[in-house]
Image (cartoon, rainbow, N blue to C red; front, side, top):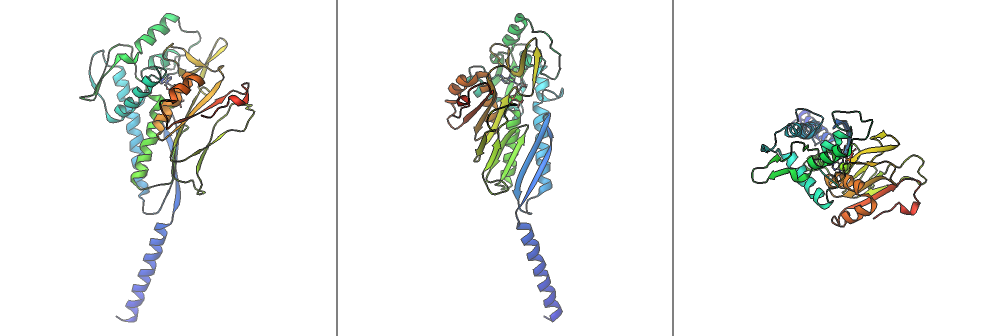
Length: 335
Ligand code: ADP
Ligand code: MG
């Protein structure tokens, strides 16, 4: 081989090793966007071998398909069509809905009905649904009781054999908003894990799941929100391959007469949880964000004592309560 050819080979090898070294360099990417009426943030560490545009596309397609199945705000979604279906008509259930429903039913049962994935009738009655009815006066007791009756989970009939559902009462309206964000977070985590990514955090509207280390090579931390004037610093939760989801009445509530009613409703009574109770928020830490999300909503309904009973059934989950400032600090409990 003459000198020119040797030089060519050497230059090609040098360029190839620079390209390889560059591709194997670790770097962090941040994806952000809107979904489910809120925003999402995804941070992950990768090397140049990961197909970023493919990952972004997979996440976008996933979020769209979850919305298309489960958004009660979209009139054409599967869930809206099911809610408009006639009593007794069997409707085939797509996979995302089926998985979310299975988890919902476990939490509904464990919480004695404090969690109910069929309580959209109540959400609409109190003006928190897509119909955006302005509620100025308390609904009548008879209307509340009838809506509770219609929303009984027993009116949702599942056929495991052919993955279908039917309503047994005309007023039954499914709504999985209390755990859909958590489910989507878990599904995004599965996409990242399929690409062999180990260090990441995913957040949709405050529901979070992390894996591995943060960009500073430390454990991931989440700072809990506290009420205005809270007399202590906001607690920080350290997460290790875990999820955290929070429920509270801090942002979404209405005022009727002197009381503030939150968007979280006790399906057993039909009344929203009021903001004047001592509980500001509940956060649940668990291996899966869907479970955290559903349990946090259930715990907000149940209050501190009731939550402690519920959480005994979920030994790999932890709950954190933030109580309003007027409550003595020793009641800000960790479990
Ligand atoms: P956010 O969606 O604000 O993060 P949650 O996860 O607690 O809060 O979900 C609240 C939503 O869940 C409500 O807007 C309503 O659609 C629905 N919901 C309200 N009360 C209940 C309940 N007791 N069980 C199940 N879903 C509920
Ligand atoms: Mg929730």
